[in-house]
Image (cartoon, rainbow, N blue to C red; front, top):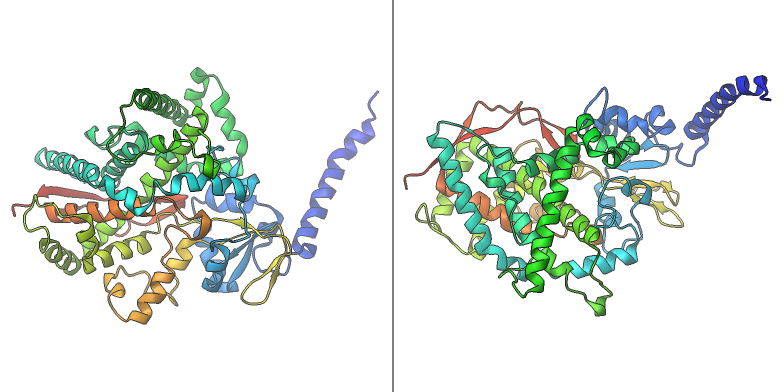
Length: 502
């Protein structure tokens, strides 16, 4: 027979436990000396409060406000510190760093068997080394003709919209182009996103929606159980589940098609991710993954390479079109190697154009498409921050790229889009280059940096040279954003996209 007094006492005891835990975390925890909201010291749901409800994607900007008050390091969780001191960035994210990813955080975010999600440093090194040669500059240069072909087809679609009297939503148009680029590189066959007349294909919408759902998944991991429900039930609870199943089937079909052709000796004329994954490397300890492992790897790479490049080129384009002086100078420079509307120049020549390079660097800084922190765990023995404060082992610690790129001590007038900053004093440029970190740094830096650069150079060059672009009903207010892992813009950047006469 149950003791009723015990049952009555249970909630009281639990309440006492919670109060005691809060008191410990606020005043007696090893991180209690770091400033920050008491609510953040008590619970990780402080972050959810700022990212999910009643706010939306606002934690990054609240951290920015807190750093202005408290300085270089603030406490943002029971066991987490956020740092904005640039002196610490290259220590936290350097090659050979002893900091490591938090398994508890990454196991809930999807694609658990991908290289990005691998938290064991040794296994990560094996898996990454198998892909590094594929993403080398020499390998990526072999993609140039493929990328140019997609840009030309995409350019024709832009013109079709103009002739039909329809302005183009540039975020989705650019993401459709980068989607077809990265899926061709991954699967050897594109998803056909450019063919959608509104540039709103399911894959483009799905990857965007999934990344924007990560705040919820991180705060409430049980949400992922929706994927385990019977499809006819889950699709009525979440439209994203329906799109997710579509993507699973599409990816599986592309993998099956590629593997069948590969085994029959029918291989693409350019390097592909699937081709690399299907090639074991005993010397480096790499074995061919399972089909699910292949799928996780490829989908993660597509996700990472699509939205970020699309957003960077879109934000840069808006700022260039907004400033006639910047636009005209860039166009004049492009005409020196692209004399005609349909001219094509080697990528290596585009790279040498100083003003185009300045515009792309400034787009990467200003857009900061992967703006959020990338946390690590402090290694055994703990560490000292540049200001002398000690952080114990096992503490989660991170820095947001956005706060580096918008630090006025590194980039003067950071809220101004200014390509000129990359063409001035060599000492200042060297400092800026050191802290231009859109792809992060160290052993966990983005694999796709060479591909992203080629995409940005070719997209920006041919789009500006071939199209007479005009902003349509879009203001600076529309280009403000929430941090939903990737930026979610408050409005839509639309543009008229007629072909140039000459």
